[in-house]
Amino acid sequence: MSTKELMKVLVTRRIPQEGLDVLTNAGICDVSVWDSDEPVPRSELLKRVQGAHGLFCMLSDRIDTEVLDAAGPQLKVISTLSVGFDHLAIDEIQKRGIRVGYTPDVLTDATAELTVALLLATARRLPEGIQEVKSGGWSSWKPLWLCGYSLSGSTVGVIGLGRIGLAIAQRLKPFGVRRLLYTGRQPKPQAQEVDGEYVPLDTLLRESDFVVVSCALNPDTRALCDKTFFSMMKKTAVFINTSRGAVVNQEDLFEALSTGQIAAAGLDVTTPEPLPTDHPLLTLTNCVVLPHIGSATYSTRGTMVKLSVNNLLAGLSGDAMPSELKL
Ligand code: NDP
Ligand code: DGY
Image 1 (cartoon, rainbow, N blue to C red):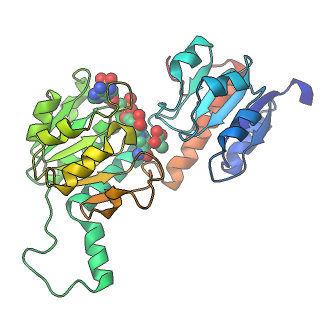
Image 2: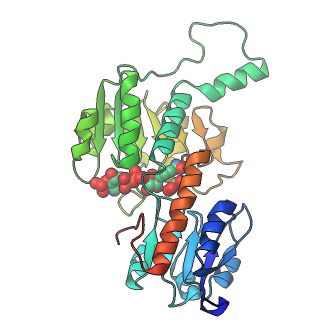
Image 3: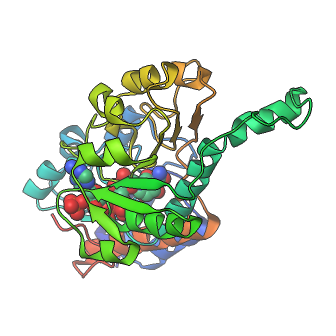
């Protein structure tokens, strides 16, 4: 195939060389990469996407009508290096007959592990403890110092018992969780594996000691966790979110945390990302914020890249994708 006949592919971030090699060696595409660890600026994205047949993007790239128009009608496939797809204008993409590849399953274990780590760090106040050791605040063993909340004998509520929600529940149960509640659009047969009880959201909030958000971001879940939501939670409850920042109204969360409406929160995702260093949430000792590292293990990221590359190549060739989002 001559260079002229190669399909144009834009990769919006530096990815491991092995991934690029697979793309290039397939011999069907001419690959251009935004060769940086930082996101491609919007103006560059709009310029570089022109004429692309394939777009390999990240969750931080907003792929909307403007980008699709800039790309042009030849765009066949978008492959996102994520399982979440709230950054993609799905209706418009569907209208244009563009196929979408994503990365379900391969990051489930890593994200569930991180969620458990964040939950324990938040409930047992690990960042505060570490800080006290470093600052000299540790004067002696004290009966009531740095006490937190235990999973043993607790009720855990999971909002969105999908792939990751279930994997979180499976990992939490062996800590001695007494009841596992969940809510969502409908009961899930797989809930049996964790003895999960399907309950309405308000019941889950009133009865849970730990509330874990693991749903997708969609119109129903955007800003779901607001003043009313937090007002239904126990004062001793811990709130954990590893889904998307926009599920939470952060002003209401700040209010709930600073007034003692809830005990603590652990967030792996925020709005915006990165969260500005002077953000009010970062002034609170009962709020633990991580920089969106749910899937960040070496092996998981490697597998995600491979899957995304294979999704892209299959989409370009018109073949079945290993993981195609059903639109
Ligand atoms: P799934 O599609 O398997 O699970 C999403 C769940 O959300 C489904 O069970 C769905 O329920 C539920 N849901 C949708 N709407 C609602 C609603 N209104 N109320 C309650 N539940 C709802 O996806 P995954 O488990 O693979 O991933 C979940 C999300 O986790 C991703 O969309 C992404 O945003 C986030 N994520 C974050 C990571 C991180 O690094 N922090 C890493 C990976 C993912 P139903 O089936 O009934 O619609
Ligand atoms: C996703 O895949 O949606 C995560 O947010 C990053 O792995």
